[in-house]
Length: 218
Image (cartoon, rainbow, N blue to C red; front, side, top):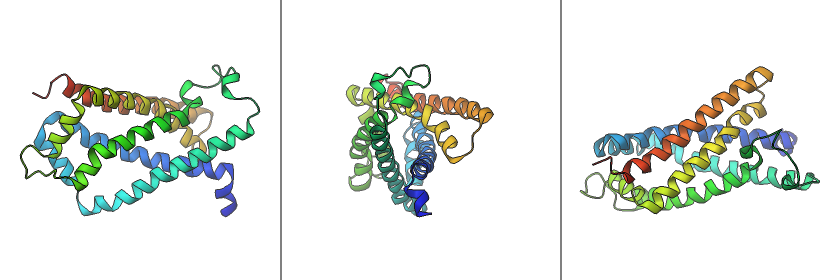
């Protein structure tokens, strides 16, 4: 077992499983965020649900999932760079792979930078600030709507959503291929599903700041 985990295949397997786990989190996160379109009561209720004890238990597991995914992505990228005699920049790979597949680590790094910003602006304030459904003007909806309606943060949020879509367009089907649920027929199917998921998450998250920046919530 230890030999498998330390092998390249084992590292890719762990990165893939952690990636699929994070996609489930993104689905839940996007579902709650879409409640913003329905007003303060709906979104605040969704936040209260996310604050239930059994949901809180998942938080450290989620954090561990991110850490594992980042660590193994870094290790695999460094190993590939050392093993590759000619860098991607010097090769013509456009016919064999997509731009996203050749830049997954860069995309991941940019998403990580946004994640840190996102945690500072929302999770930290939700967790340790005075955000409460009982305080007028300081509810979860007030914080989110005020922050993402700001042009600079709203644009950053939309760019991050696009980067997420690009990351998922390759990451989703690649994960299934790595864990062995793929062949010539299913790879095309996973690729198709991956593109659909990429559009759903990319467009879904991007529409949220646009909705507030255009004042459609008023």
